[in-house]
Length: 312
Image (cartoon, rainbow, N blue to C red):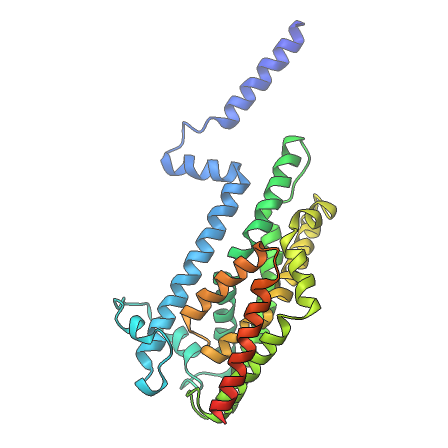
């Protein structure tokens, strides 16, 4: 090898060694440097933390809701929630829970309550929908790793996640508006109240019928095959990847918006049904068969009919 090439190679090796050598940092610094060097690790840490924190917030809110309900309007699982250890919470969280759980909280402007409800629904989306988006995010990371090895520029995976979550943030605004409307027209929190029961039956009916629709099936096909969409629309520009995340979020919303309506029938803060919907969504997106989708639709339709009969 010529001397100048050997010198360049040695210089390159020295530079690589300097870039990869984090021995001068403390333990925390080395951990942060390794995370920053590996985008996939960053994505896993951020998404895992978001899902965990969302479930912790929602569980704490569900416990507060169960403690505030009387026996006549108890929701499923309230007995278990009331027996869980009570943890002291900061005042701002207690205030946030009151805004979300009370139909008309005292000393609260409509805008403040609306903002709290938007945040509540967004936390529900993080907890139930973000896990089902994991295959899509993992697929993007795999394509990005291949491009990075070839030396091509790559947009960070969190840009894709931001676009995806932006769709669910917009959807949270709509669900919050529906929640405010339900608070306005419902005279009580009892499921057997005619207004509450009819509204719950209508939500179940819409959710059940949508399970059999062609739009539902088309959205599911897109969610089940993220590779073809991500590969065909690949770009190194963050703006394009953000729009790609929005597109993936719209397909996910098309799959799941009707299932979120079930929460209006079982209680918006029913954490057990929330977990069930999240689990079903994950299974539905990973299963090629139509059986789970149509079985869930049939159950929802029967449930809607039964609730309507009992309420009226």
